[in-house]
Length: 333
Ligand code: AVJ
Image (cartoon, rainbow, N blue to C red; front, side):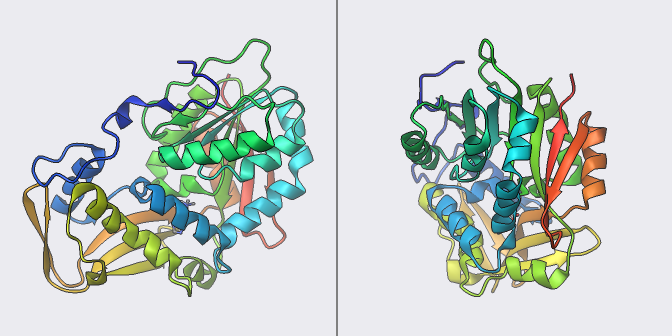
């Protein structure tokens, strides 16, 4: 499964690629999952479908918002502790990044590491990944970068370790682990522990905090998060030929305190019918499509979860306000 330098490895489950608008008998994972979501109660769909070309760009804008503290806080933590983190990694380590996005954060690690051996960014958004890899490769010409276009929530086959390589370190920043339910997070950590056997996982986790701070982070004044949420429907219109009227849906994000998570929904503003793949689906006024969970953690809770998945927790780094945490987790042998 080795690929040439900067040649994206196309994962099997993505073989359908982007879909041409085709009203009948829609194929592909997005169409299938959207139809399944619309047919079930309560309606919910995986947040991974946010990240097409436009969604990835909107997410980058979210990371710059004044209200959205996680990115800048995590970057601060990684910057302040880069030497310590690099010391944990040791020489000639390789980084496997899950949901690599725009490849900004890894630079902080690469700059501090001793002779990084290889970087394997995994992302579901192929073109976005290819462009970001090109930019990274320009700044790190000697680095072996092997992008992997894949859905890391599915079974993953990675290139074998290179001869003489150091530690294989998984990198899962941004608190993307919060998108999983606790059961899914446990399963992800178990599978990832096997992929990283003998290595480690560097994991970013957003922390439980004042609900007002959380609320503001997902309800920004400029409406970028709303556009990001609504892009799910815009994407369906582009790829599946659906006719969602975006104005007929409202962005809703709130903190569910008992479940320690932000929930995002798209709320139908009126009674309406949507056709997908030859099926008609009815929305009542106020009915929602649940598009994302973003779980918040305590440091002890996250470490306990990692232990249940077979990891041995190492150092934890945080910011002075305890907004966000970065965990070193030793993978099973
Ligand atoms: C990428 C999943 C970490 O949950 O905060 C940002 C995505 N959603 N604003 C998060 C997101 C709405 C983000 N993660």
